[in-house]
Image (cartoon, rainbow, N blue to C red):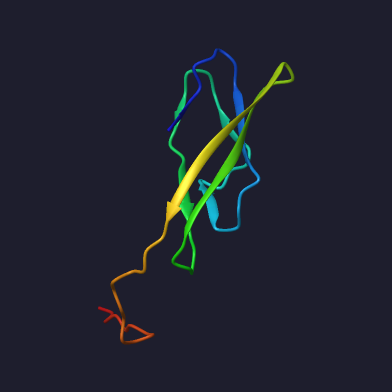
Length: 95
């Protein structure tokens, strides 16, 4: 959840994003009006079972008055999915 506690609109950018990380909704920059809250999802997609640490930089822009940078550390531990599917295609009946 991102909340704008100021009386001015904010634009928030995430940079640089590793290829395995996506921000949803995919609006870059994310515009947040005064006193508004926006739900933002950070999605990590990887084909590998790995443990990874890194930092995503966040830039908050308030018009042309103020730019502020934040550093958001993250830690990802990806495990293999215990589900297996025997078919590569699933047919659904149509009514």
